[in-house]
Length: 100
Image (cartoon, rainbow, N blue to C red; front, top):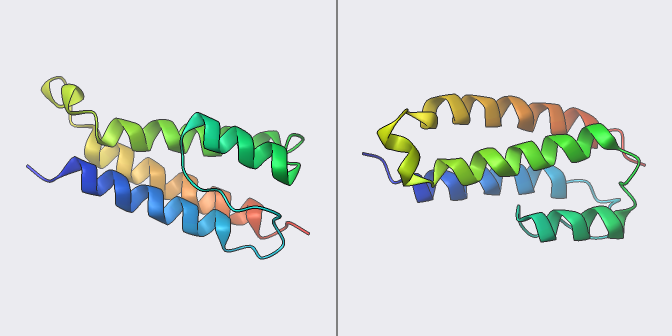
């Protein structure tokens, strides 16, 4: 069994790197907790960018699921979640590139 916690950390690092690569944001996103995301939205004025907000929260939920060992008994979320996280990361990257 792979270490799901490490997979989660790698996924979160990838998402944070994608979001924080844009130099024009006022404050970087420091984590994928609900509080960190809401703080980032407020400080950067992203309230009107509903698609980005939805994608970031969905990605956060999926990364948390990677480390939820109780899920493994019923299904193998690792591959499905990893593929979806990669897809969401690409969508976030496309939105972020148009920030002014």
